[in-house]
Image (tube, rainbow, N blue to C red; front, side, top):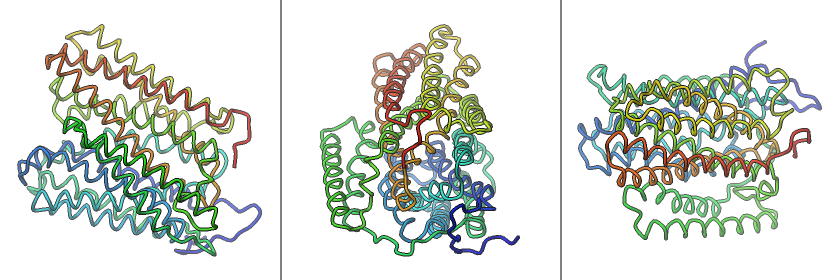
Amino acid sequence: MAAPTAGATPSVSAEPAPYRWRWIALAVLLVAEAMDMLDALVANIAAPSIRADLGGGESTMQWLGAAYALAMAVGLITGGRLGDIVGRRRMFLIGSCGFTTASMLCAVSVSSGMLIGARGLQGLFGAVLIPQGLGIIKEMFDGPELGRAFGMFGPVMGLATVGGPVLAGVLIDADLFGAGWRMIFAVNLPLGLLALLGGWKVLPESRYETPPRLDLTGVALASLAALLVIFPLVQGRELGWPAWTFASLAAGLGLFAVFGRYEARKARAGGDPLVVPALFRKRAFSGGLAVGALLFAALTGFSLVLSLFLQAGLGYTPLKEGLGSLPWSLGMILGAAIQIAEPYGVVERLGRKIIQLGVAVMAFGLALIVLTLHLAGTTVTIGRIAPALVVAGLGMGLVMGPFFDTVLCAVEPHETGSASGTLTAVQQLGGSLGTAVLGTVFFTALAHQGTTLPGYTTTVTITLWTGTGLLAVAFLASFLLPRPGLPRER
């Protein structure tokens, strides 16, 4: 049989056959996911080299990551909805092309301002690219296969989390062709071309006979609200939390409330809202957003704390720090493999229990790290905390696949783009929240404990207990998810 024709609309039947190229298409989507994860991580590792080459102050290094995170957070909800309107395959191709082009602009930047602008452009096209994957996966897979497809996100996130710092360290040290730090962005060229060509060849397209219209007022309200919330979370800790950061947070949350009322009124009037209000009346989705925000807050905050401890506390180089994170990533891969390999569908049989188990295991892993630091004292090494890192990663790997499947189980086909964009935006918000909260706890504690190794171990202990608290709240929020044995709501 020939490969599917680009842009073809699948025929509608009572029992449609599974999409033939679905596993190859999944691989293409995972390449795009890995590309996004890598770019979210590598700039922080390369920041000192970039500053030495292009100049600029400490704010320059800070904005290399902040510009990407802010632009993506602001555009995610709109990017997901555009998939419903224009077609998810088409938006995936646009996002891949734009992201790759922006990456090359980063690689050839001649000033810090140009680089920061290109990073923002990367984030905007990432907001177009990433939400399409969740919707396309939900169209291609069903039943136990859907859980296994979403389960693949765990290994990809694990590899990208450790691969980003390691790759950045290797490329900068190798100084290929005299390019130095520029290679960390140039490496996106083959990845982007793979995503673009693979997406053009094998991704299915589905278009509505009457596509919804873009809610421009909703776009403006959601984008401004996201900017007002994310900006102070990204910048607040570095600036010492001045009063305007709290005012911005309050204004952003208030504007989200205005956005919600506007969207509900638009839906009642028969219009096409940017975010379908009915989504939030579905417990699987609304509960999943709460769990996701807390999980990604704990995940991102923990990654920050681990990196700071390995580099500043133990004196590891960026490359050695990346290698030191391997046990965490291997644990994530193992947890995802356990979930994927189950032949009858873990989520179908266990529902929220597998997510609760994963959260509990991850919290236990963080507690094991604390215990190891206490017992090791000044003899702590990455080898000593490696078993605890594997346990923590195992918990996250168990959660990752079932989380996406469970949250999107309530979503109707016409709501997929809106749901995917909202879910991804909440992940980004959770990551920013985790960086702000755990980063603030870490640096505040370090100022009191001192920068000796015992001071760092005490600081990490305090911070990890805070992260465990976030996971405890996530565990409680998971009771909003569907119970095992019940039909998952639609």
